[in-house]
Each structure stands twice: as C-alpha cells, then as structure tokens.
Image (tube, rainbow, N blue to C red; front, side, top):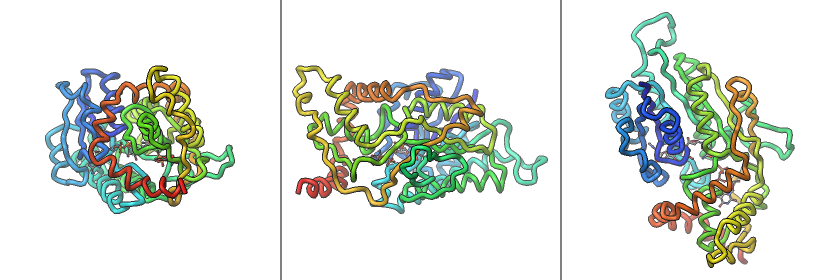
Length: 372
Ligand code: NAD
Ligand code: TYD
C-alpha cells in the first residue's frame, strides 16, 4: 500500500487532488494531508473523506522542521505531492515576505525532510542513494516563465528561461530552482510540473473565476483589471490532477513537465461568459437574474506588474505520457458555475470571516476611483 504525503491538501487543487486519489485508488492507498490551514485552507473541502481509515490530517506548517520530520518518522512515505504555498499574486504584492517564507523556505524544509527520510546509508551513487520507488513531485506554475507577447504562436516550453515578475512567481521560481538543485546535487528523486491557471470547484474567491461568480450572485460589481485583455490559459482542475497522477507514476525522474489546456482567453471574455452562463442557469423566478448583466462589469486600476499573456505548450507531457485535457472550457465553466451555485453555503462559510476585510483592502479604492 503506497503512502502519499500531500501538502496543502485543504486548498483548491490539493483537495481536488485528494478526491482524485480516492476516486481512482480507493482503499488501496494511504493519504496524509499536511496543511497549516491558512485563510486558503478549508477542511470543509474534504468533509466527505475525513472519516476514511486510510486518510490522516496533520495540521502543520511546512516550514516547521520538527513537525515535518515527525510525519516522515511516523510514516513510510512513498510519494510527496507538494502543493502547499501562498498562491495569490495580489496578496504577494502586499506581503512579499510571507511568500518567500512559505514558498521558498517551506519547500526547502520539505526537500530536506524527504531527503533525510529517504536516504540510504550507502549504495552505488556517490551523489545520493534513496529507497526504491520514492518520489517528490513539486507542483508549480507557468508564471515562473514571465509574460508572453500577444503573438498567438508564442508559448512557454520546458526550456523557456525563467523570468518571473511578481513576488508570487519569483518565490515559486526560487522553489523550482531548489528542487532542480536537489536533483542535480543529490540525485534527489523528483519531478516538477508547471501548470497554467486552474478553475473548478473549491477555489477560494480571491481568484478571478470564483470571485466574479460570487460577486455576481451578490449583486456586486465585477472588477476587471486594466483593459481586461490580459490572457490566461485555463485548465479544468481535474485535468491537472490527472496530469499530476501521471507524472507521479509514469514520468522519468528529474523531468519537468508543462501542463496546460491550449485554452487561452482574455479576462473580459471569461467575465462575459460567467454572466451569460449564470443568467442561463438561474431560474427565471430568482430576483438576482435580472441584476446580472454586463452593467456590473467595472474596469479598475490595473494590477502592478500585470503579466500580459500566459500560454503553455503541453507537447512534452502529451508526447511522453499521453496526457491531454479532457474538459472543454464551455463544459468546465458550466460545471464550475453550477458547483458554486449549488454550494452557496460553502461560499458563505469562507466569506463570512476576514474575507470582506480582504475584499475592502483590495478593491475599495480601485472601485471608488473607477466610478469617478
Ligand atoms: P490555495 O491557495 O488554494 O491552497 C494552498 C493550501 O496550502 C491551503 O490549504 C493552505 O492552507 C496551505 N498552506 C499555505 N501555507 C502553508 C504552510 N506554510 N504550511 C502548510 N500548508 C500551507 O492554492 P492552490 O490554488 O490550490 O495551488 C496549489 C499549488 O499549485 C500551489 O503551489 C500553486 O503555486 C500551484 N499552482 C496553482 C495554480 C492555480 O491556478 N491555482 C496553477 C498552477 C500551479
Ligand atoms: P488570478 O485568478 O488572480 O490568477 P493569476 O493572476 O495567477 O493569473 O487572475 C487571473 C486574471 O484575472 C489576471 O490577469 C488578473 C485578472 N483579475 C481581474 O481582472 N480582476 C480580479 O478581481 C482578479 C482577482 C483577477
């Protein structure tokens, strides 16, 4: 029975990945979820699996040496799937040091603890010998590559030089370099994946898609940064989870893979689609339906250092591992909107605490300026 140590499993992609693992492997695996439960970590995301005998939750900070060592000491971990991170660009602009601490130092600690637990005393490789079959999968982002020109033929490849712009992407780039350094220096058994923007259930409403859905359902304005023409390459989260599973089980050690859906959209297109689908899905008797119109769209001051375009070439993962996205955007966005619509209590629970304070800090000035 293989044991998966998932970090950040109470967040958006981590919780989708844990669901994916149990849906795919059922009782034949063990999952240990290490999460600090920051504002982005929500145990409700895993309520349906928390009583499984083959699931354990450990509330811990990935920067805490003793806590992480203890997890490795008390369990025979086969795989680490490392999601835990501070993940929101706008927050990184306000509080960059937290991103360095969690994303860089936290990853360094995870690497050290895994290396210590998996190292064998001696063997043929002078650089490092590890227990058979173990692997560390570092989950990263396409934002490490910086920004692409609007030329539709320009893509991020695994060989594209890193050129991060935001404190978030700089901290993720640093964490990727640490993993690369461990692979090169100690032959540490790892892979890195760099994925484009994900969307789907359980995403915290600070990110574009759930924020716009939640605002529209609450009659709030829809704050579009700059001219709304920045491009992101959207991937349904389950497709990302399948890709991670494949890389974990099938990829050669030391390889890195770009993951993306060839699904580039301008932000304004996404916002318009959300309005359109919400109007189709809301019953005619729902009073909110009439209010959800393009009049809610409000162009606000741009994000500082806003990357213009991201677009991934997923050719390598397609060629090597046979992965391709399965969810078309038009289906994925409808499933996503329906999910948020059906889980309004989930949304209320995560937005009734500090969330409105965050929203005020991030948007009040921007929205006030835009109406002048
Ligand atoms: P998220 O913000 O939704 O979740 C992050 C999780 O990590 C939360 O559960 C949080 O409690 C936990 N966490 C944060 N700091 C921690 C710490 N110090 N110790 C332990 N746990 C901690 O993030 P997400 O969107 O699910 O992203 C997961 C990973 O995937 C991140 O590494 C991110 O960089 C990467 N990624 C995200 C996207 C995307 O579109 N969301 C795309 C590509 C890559
Ligand atoms: P986001 O979901 O924060 O992801 P990332 O910045 O990591 O790509 O933002 C996606 C795009 O949407 C990005 O170009 C910024 C833009 N955006 C808005 O226009 N308004 C908003 O309120 C938010 C959160 C994002």
